[in-house]
Image (tube, rainbow, N blue to C red):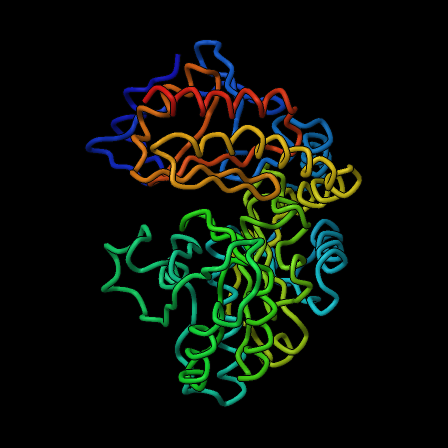
Length: 419
């Protein structure tokens, strides 16, 4: 048996405390879309382990990729050396992203990718003599990670980092997009953005936001037309555009990348989470040649585990596994099942709105969820889910069966009907 007393007294878990920790559930095995607890209970994972395990768990192709690479080398420094997994993964990322994005920087995690993207944009501006530029423009309700640069462009009020606000660089925040994904476009939706650029572009290094889906800041979906208008305005005022696709990349929204809903490209894109299929921590920052050439002779960043061979190889295998599958049809099937199972929740008095896009389903409540209680009830139903604030949401692995989605959504309905 696992020593849960030691875990409680000595191990920090995300966004909790050691003085009064939230309960944890001991996992001993994971296969397919299910987690097995120490007591033998199996749970359908509705979260893809924070949106990363798109192929589910213990996938034989990805397992083999790790085994084969491990027999050659698990790690080698990327400073002054290179290796086939990094080269082949780089080729694949350049191939599948917009043709303008062809310069790849490998980093450790999503947060570090955001740090790298911000540093890229800043160094580019400084090398161009634009030393007066010292701000980033971003949205309220945004989330970009937990490191200091990333925290500084997360929502300063409703985000998770308000306790550190006095330590953070102060950037420019505007209201998050108010146009739903399918809302007819009106130029009024981009008015605040346009005004901010018009008034402050001389001081703005770059615009950074999550395209189409604002993730941990509220699971908000917005119109592709906003991306088109934002791209045009950034070009007009000579401001770089960064898309944080760490949560949305690799099929989650129904397109391989969320920016493809609008058929526009950023100057810099951040990728992570599903990049390795949830096997290893790895992220990538891809920029266009203008940014790369404008940075100068040395870009001053270099993580110890940059381009880790194990991570690069499993990432390459994960991408190939996704692209060789009928992933678009699978996402459409998931979307239809989520819509069918979650839309009826709108009839409950506690529910404010239901949103579904691709393999993302969201039930927004009027009041915050009692996370501990809700999770316990879902575990009794055989489902692993992690709500936050007033949101119950699901982002399952792409390999999930419709019957399993139906079980997840019916369990949510049951609990909402019997609070």
